[in-house]
Length: 124
Image (cartoon, rainbow, N blue to C red):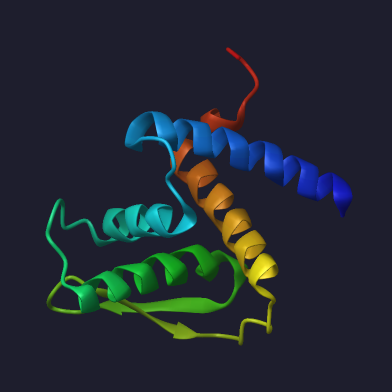
């Protein structure tokens, strides 16, 4: 378990460095979730209302947790918003455990998007 956490931390640090180069220092998980949600919506740049921002975070969360078996994609509505159904309940997690789950999911998402090149040692 400790080895996995060390590997996850190393991958997380690489991801953060990459994102900070693109989006500036100090980006936090909530900001990364917004990026994922906007990317998954595919609507391009748009000013979102407060309620829409919550929906964008929901899109990101479902997208990230779907490969872990927590959600299944249902459809995309006429306005272009994807919808999921819960498959299984997310276990009750302490805040630190929630953050760890999201870090794992974000690393997996960006690995998939970047075809693992982000996490390779070559060129460092």
